[in-house]
Length: 552
Image 1: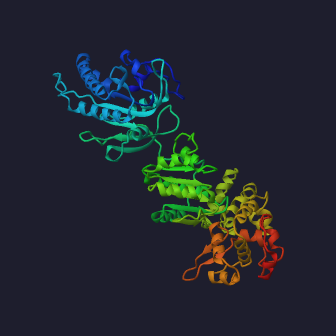
Image 2: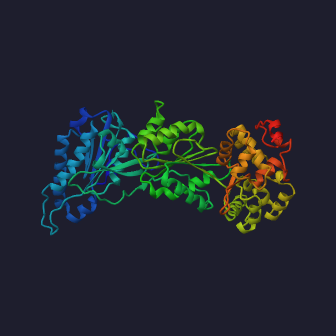
């Protein structure tokens, strides 16, 4: 009998969400007074394909096989003090007060079944050995009305239903409670069990003499929790390749840039391509105020009730090979991220934020404007979101006019969608700041980024904005020769993508303020020096030493 069928045969005592039926499990009379409580390990077993086996053998031969199977299981349960809660048809439901004994019992049951002398029954098929599948799980449970009313029972039954004949499947909770590791188990990953919230990590128990190769569990694997795309993102192959190269030698990579520059879309799209490469999948979260709590939610673990969310998350990830994607990360998360990397050696982290975390071993990748063809496709996608079917070819000239600067593309989406790319380009030429900053969102994004950088970095930004062709490192040093930390200021600007890097062949790299940002800071002109009014054109939150600016 299928385990789920056995569950249905009992009286209702606990209600599961969704389509999962509610069941209670009542012990045999002899077991009523000895039911374990607290941390309980449950075991379900049944014969794979029992209905086909019974039909093929006939009633009496099947009865012989079934009774032999029951006798062998009960003998092992007696030795390991397993309490038989219910037996119906070919299934067993058993409780143990010790997870390690339950694991040993499961192994010995499979071993006994394989070594037993099974009757030939004269059917011309040789000895008939039933192939038993087993599921184990450990959780908190308390006897109620002579049985158990807990979702942990249903989880165990679902685990058993996911096993193949001769296989022992268990939850990671059982493995941890039993102290199993190394060659005694194989981690199969996270799965969604029908009717149960969250995910369950499954392991396969292994032992000498038992088969170890089985097909994947016939249930839905949970390899990642990346949010579903509402539409296909525009591919950014150059950025994908750059991230691939970075992770070849680093465990922490941060993608930085202005809000609205496409960091979230990029890291999600890249991480989705990497799912098959990580044995324990990809986990995505926004850290918010509590990185530990966000990680627990991402891996499908319950909230920690004792304020130790980060410790609990680290314990869960300590021996797992997973990619963690942290979106909208801030410097305040740095110590927790460093601890996570230090204590979980197989974990790699892709972080996205306005600024890098500045941790040891961190590879920083500032998100530069995409190639014009990619930028044009992005602008066409923004227009499509607004109901306008402009193509990438239609938008190419407009995208080129703002150098593919993604915050500017977003700012142009409304006027392009409700007018046309030609109309938007004409208006952009007439008054670029008015077009880009309609509604104030473009300026607000710049304000936020500039507010985060240091005073020297702000001064360098203004000076570079006045040089339309950009400057080499030597020229930046010359511009800032009387200030300390000038190169550090330049690094800050590159990290937050307020300055882009151009690398002409065989020449020094040029550092340049993107044209849309220069328009906002300096207007359309090409001033030879920074005008006194320049500081007022930058965000209100930015405070500059005007005398120093004029002196330069």
